Image (cartoon, rainbow, N blue to C red; front, side, top):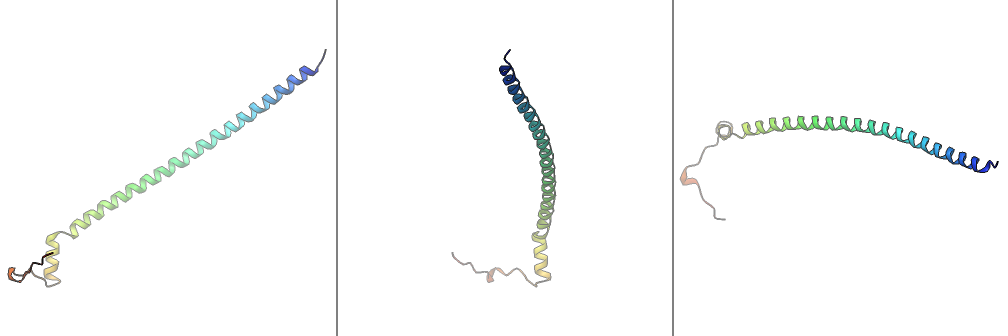
Length: 98
């Protein structure tokens, strides 16, 4: 009986088995890496969302502060009391044509 075809078959099957084993190992490492990367990116997203929420709260506070500081009554009071300003008489107002 000639053993060469049988040996060639075992060599081919060993090669296929080695390739399949390598594929399984690479696939396992890839799954682990992708899972780790997914968790890392999810944590980064959560931090970014938290930072955005804090910025929105700060923006709301700044808008509220701006509206209170630019209240016409407050501006008029500061102009009269601290800067000694007054509304001019109608005769002192001059219109400038563009």
